[in-house]
Structure formats: structure tokens, C-alpha cells
Length: 225
View 1 (cartoon, rainbow, N blue to C red):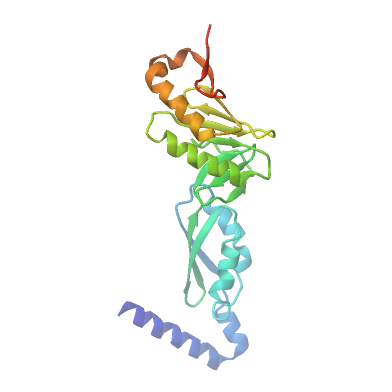
View 2 (view 1 turned 45 degrees about the vertical axis):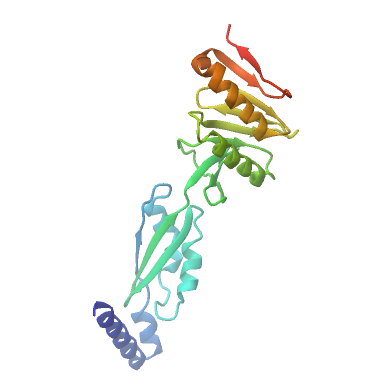
């Protein structure tokens, strides 16, 4: 019932504007207000108001929703938007932000949707850090997800994962342990470490500096003096 009344009202406004002439129609439906809604965890509402200034003055009647969405999606933290026209002069935009998965290199973030965002300012987020050559974001993200799955049944969590230019992987856990994984059989080596960790190292993690898994049948442990 409410939608029907709103539709009738909108149609009435359009008919009124048409009878008033083209120039009157352009003025009558000129957007003068943008209402923005969302959680705003990683981007400010004020910043979005500034980013959407180009929509002010557009004709609400003749501007398509797809054209409005193209502008609304431009800010890099925006994953998707829902747009609604509120006659005669208001635009409502519901914003959904990207969810950060991990830092990548010095000033970038990889989102849960595998989108890379360049940071304009430093964000202090409780997420892992990934380091790799600039052209290997897909590789490091895939390896990060696989390693996270292997670790999911343990108390170990990734603090930093590095892929060096030679193709070797290094993993640093949140408890500070430095794990050398090398370039081959990464998951097999990680599982071997987990087996040793559960049987021999679990109660002595604070005494360990690093663990080297680049051996065919075991690991090498560097102990604190």
C-alpha cells in the first residue's frame, strides 16, 4: 500500500513537471540532497559526501540508477551500493564497504574479495601482513588462504607471511616464532612442523627463535640462549 502511494506520488510529480515545461522539470528534479547510510568502518561519511558532490545538480528524473552507481562506487573502499531516488530532489545511497583481509607490502590492503586497496593513511588493524613482489598478489593470497586452512585446527595464527624475490616463503606466527618454509612443498613442510610442534615444542615455544623446515624428514630448531 505504501509503495503504491509513493509510486502514485512520483508519477504525479512527473506529470506536473512535464506540464510545467522542460526547464521547469530540470529545476524541479535537480538533486540537492544526498543521504548516505552504512557502517563507515574504513571510510568517513564526510569523505563520501565530498566524493558524491558531482551528483548534486543532476536531474533525478533523467539520470539513470546505473549512472549514479558508477559515481557512487568510485571511492576505493566501496564494495557495492544500493541507490534509491526519493522524489523530487533527494538521493539515498546505502554503502557496503570492502572487508580487509591482510596488509600487503607497505601501504596496501588485500580485501576478502581479493581487491587491492592503496592506503592514503596508515590504518592500525588487527590483520596479518603479507609481503611479496608487486606482481604476485594472487600467489601470496592463495598461499595465505591455504596456510590459514592448515593452521585452523591449531592455536597458531599468522602474523606475517613473506614471499621473497627468489620464491622462498617465510612465516612468522603471532607468538613470534619464525618459520622457514623454502620454495617447495610448502604445505607438506608446514604439516611436518605442526606434528613436531604438537609433540615436542608446544610447551617450549617461548624458548624458540626460529624453525627451519627445509629438510626432507625433520626440522631444525634455533633455541634462545
